[in-house]
Length: 97
Image (cartoon, rainbow, N blue to C red; front, side):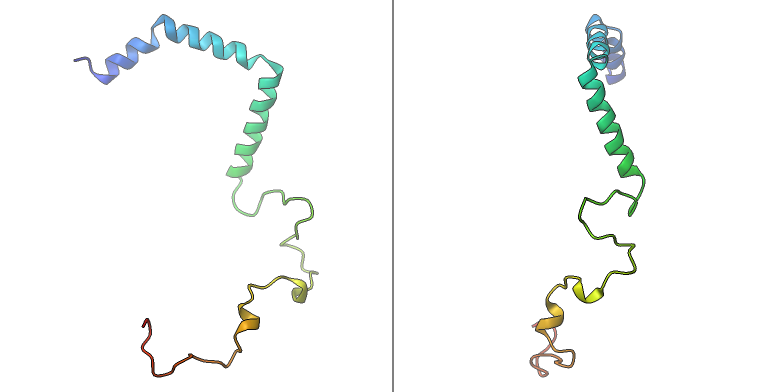
């Protein structure tokens, strides 16, 4: 049985590989495909810039804007459902039970 490296080497030097390379070159010269490639490159590049450096969606709040009114920011709802001094519901109950 041929080793995997022998199979790969045979494939790389086969006429089928040359045909696939030529087909890829032809597709790469198509203006529509070039635009798709450019969009994909931009998408990947924006992912590699790191957290917090993406362009926010139009209309979304700017997390760096210090002039935002905190009272207008949405909350999880937990702050309004539970009083700060409520404590545990049953002080005699064991945690996790």
